[in-house]
Length: 134
Image 1 (cartoon, helix red, strand yellow):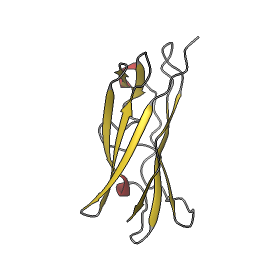
Image 2: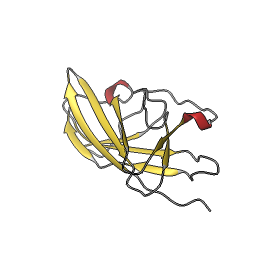
Image 3: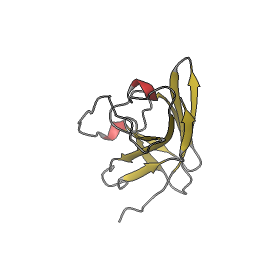
Image 4: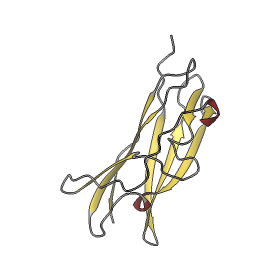
């Protein structure tokens, strides 16, 4: 049986030149290797699916405007994180989500890392929540 694993995900947000930029740090806090899908964690800063939960002060969800790419997940898509290791992603949120200036938002990274056959079950990836005023 494949062991259930957890990972710490720390989200911080900065607003710079009109861009809402998420810095997401994935930290392996387990005693074994964790495999993260490079597409899911946006290692290359490209968003390919709805990976953030964003709600405004009226509890309305921000619309995801980016692509939704269906693909076959390949073993070479996974990044191995040894215990204690971390990897960071930098993502421009308002490029793929409809954010309106003058609103307050609660933002959280919220995605599912796919199963890595015979190595790891699907992982729910959930960060801390950050509140910003855009």
